[in-house]
Image (cartoon, rainbow, N blue to C red; front, side, top):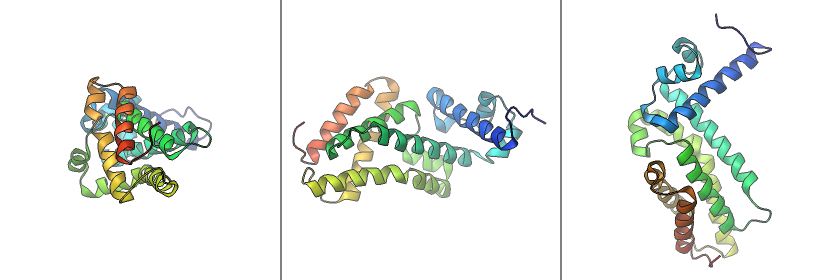
Length: 200
């Protein structure tokens, strides 16, 4: 039986779960989420596969938990990174920057590849986990349209297009062909022009 290093079993389980998710984070920077095996994760976390299965029965469950963790981190970072009284354009720039930071920090395959790897049911759960980020973007677009700063024909469709544009920078970022600063500048400028926002 593994030695308990925390004051309680509950704390020990929370620490072990955190180690597992940190291991996924580290591995994703080296080999990509789609190629990570449960054996890789167990080895990186310093536990056996049997212990790992006590927390996550399969790769889909592990990736869902990891996605939820990354989403929560994104939302916290977004809320803390906003200047007081930020305009919709400022909020959009912060959103784009954090999304690009996330693509670089936690490289992952595109939506089609993830769907094929996880299967439709798990992929739908994954989509539900990242829905809060989509709602933040929709709120930014709604507020910009309401203030007259943005011209938006269809908020939901525009949000999907912006996310696709951000995703298009995934490979250039990971390969080092573009920096996060440059990608943020390019994506933000393109989107704000498309929304009819006044020049900064």
